[in-house]
Amino acid sequence: MDEDLSVHERTASDILDTSPDAIFLVDSTGRISYVNDRVNDLFGYEPDELLGEAIEEVVPEAIRDSHAADRDSYIEDPTTRPMGSGLDLAARRKDGSTFPVNISLSPIEIDESTYVISVVRDVTDQEALRAKYKTILEAVPDPVVVADAATGKIVESNEQVIDLLGYEPAELRGEAQTFLHPSGEADRYRNLFERHVARDQAIFTQFPDGSDLYLETEDGERVPVEINAKIFELGDRSLIVGVFRDITRRKKREDALERLHTATRDLMTATSTETVASIASETASQILDLPVNGVHLYDPTRDALVPVAWSDPLETMFDGAPPAIQRGDGLAWEAFEGGESEIYPDLREADDVLSAETEFLSELHLPLGEHGVMLISSTTASDFEATDEALAQVLADNVEAALDRVERERELETQNEKLEEFARVVSHDLRNPLNVASGRLDLLRAESESPHLDPIVDALDRMERIVGDVLWLAREGRDLGSTEFVELRSVLESSWTMAADGRRESELVVADDGGDGHWAVRADYERLCQLFENLFRNALDHGNDAVTVTVGELETGFFVEDDGPGIPADERERVFESGYTTSREGTGFGLSIVEQVVDAHGWDVRLTEGVDGGARFEITGVEPSPD
Image 1 (cartoon, rainbow, N blue to C red):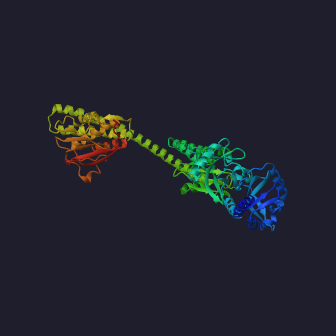
Image 2: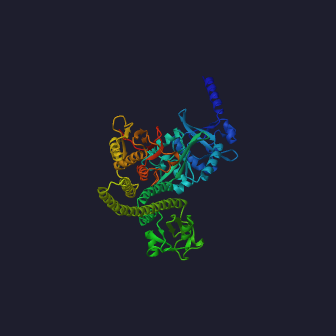
Image 3: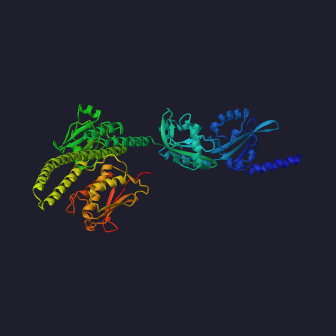
């Protein structure tokens, strides 16, 4: 029996000696009862030299006293401590040198006595790697936190966490990685990490529901972040490294852009330059956080840039409105005249400053095209960041576009007033003489049967049609009334009756009405009638006595085609010009009106040759009835 036991002991000893780690068996008094052969390689001792010695023989001298106390405490309540517990441990060689180790402890009962098995692993290579990655961590400009992938406990962090979160790296060591995130949301963040690690997705900025990720500072402040996380192996440990990028500025910029977009809608509905300037100043102050600003617009009567809108802080500084800028005066005029935005980090270093006693130390000068310039100032040097400049430029571009639109609308309003005056003159000053001539012609016809009377009647009728077309163009213009789905058959019949005017030899053919007799398109009813009437009249005026006009459906519209003589290819580009006609009866305005109606609806018109050689007008881009 003793021989069998000896065999087992020798077998166990052989197995322990093959271990790559040094193994110690320590009794309850801290004396070494057994060591394997590996202690020679790691510690420089022969195994027999350590038997009976206190375990503190292989502990660095500086911590031997505290170690003895920790050892006694452990013996009283022994528990298993696994390898790689995250402690910074060191061991002492026979020559007095030390080296980093990982140690596992396991209690064992032998002959009713408690012993401790201590497995010591040399982690010098791992520590070298750790030192290397710690150097890398400190070189990264963003906060970096390293956690054990198995336990989720923080094992390392760089100094940058202090600036962002207020914690010292040592304060975070041993905490769960979810400790960094808002209180009460540990499970939510833990699930997010596990899902991303499982999918090997490195960068994430939001939860699946689109909500943002946050870190929570020592003071309880929430900081929006972008996280770049990755698992890596360090020796026999799996670690997860998280790089946290503060995106507060990015979020503010995105918010500013969104609010700037809303302000742009207000700019594009403003009806005066003064309103545009006021919105611009308010937007710079409230959205872009550029509180000292003003808008100067060019006044040709004064040949100067005149203040039109300015912020309250600017008014306080000037004790009223800021001064006008005369031609050639200062940097602002240079920006306006040159058309290039300029940023002055320190006005004290710039030439041609209007006043050497100015309170402003940095400025942004943003030209508004031919309209003026927007000035943004600060009493602090180098106060504007690249983001400020970029957002201010976006605002300036939008303000310039709004001022362009207001000017165009003002010019159009003036033009419309002139057209209305023109229409009044045409209606009163031309129709009155025409009415007199028609009345006298009726009296003359009662007294004479001259062959010259009918040509006079035709001429007066043509003049009446010209007056009517000119009035339509002047008063209707390109403005469109309300639109609705209009059934074309009723429009076609009504327009044909007006245009044909009793020409019974001519014929209207509806080639396709949708198949069910309810062919409809979205349009302004009156304008659509005018379009068809003019197209029909064009065909009748240029055709023979028995012209056939065909109306049919296209994929995105309709066509009007006749079997008349057609229009030569080299003249098709001119037919829509006002006053152009090849017919003695035509006014020259009919097809111009057609084009006006088409443009007002947002459609397109194309003139080509019909199947029988006549003219074919194709109108496309038309919204059909949903039925």
